[in-house]
Length: 155
Image (tube, rainbow, N blue to C red; front, side):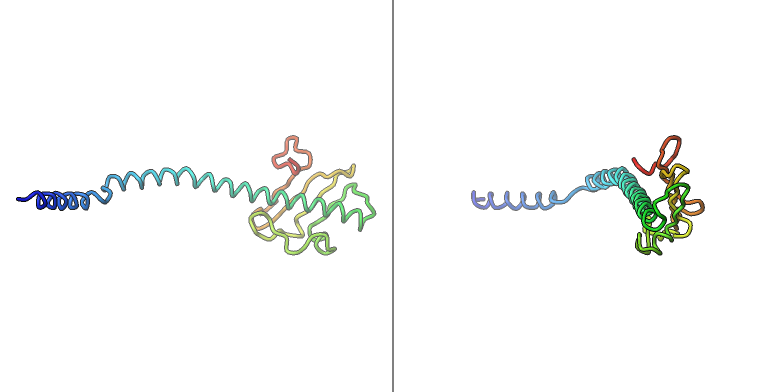
């Protein structure tokens, strides 16, 4: 055999060997799938918590907007006396202080008749209650004085 033929045969063998080694083994692919599964198992709950927190923050911001609109409503429509006042979202919508429809952070319509801003006997903000498709029954109440209260209005 001549030297050129030997080199050509070696190249063919190397080419066949490379062709066989070009792909990944089943174990390597399985390892990658397992690692991706672990990453997904960690990341998905974290992302879900971030989304829920942003929705709750959006609902809190809606409550703050209701409070600000209620202050303007009492000053403009009720002579500025805040003592023992309860202003419903319906009052605010009917008089143009908040646009219809008003939605919570989850994108569901807020019940305008049962959602309200409450002022105490000194005229200070007491709470804002939001009732919607997501917050059913008593709704969620944000308190201006967060002492011993679960959901403070102002953080």
